[in-house]
Amino acid sequence: MIERFLPAPWNDWMGSLTVPSLTRQLTGVPGSGAFGPSSAIAILAGYVVISLLTAALAINRRDA
Image (cartoon, rainbow, N blue to C red):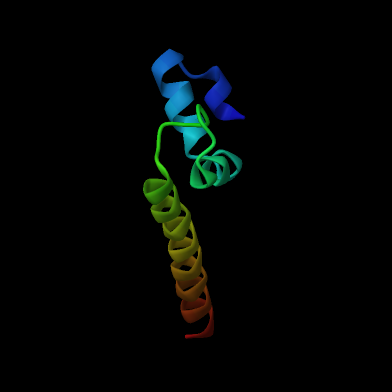
């Protein structure tokens, strides 16, 4: 939602980083974003890794 309020080149790029847009880019829908399928899967995998690392850090700090 925030990307709608950004200036012209930034709003398209930030919109390409959202999960719904990344899934369209992963399937290769033309004109769906700034990344190709391989970049989209890497970014989606990065979301998963960052989420799991954040959860692991939170659990380890609270249980320590």
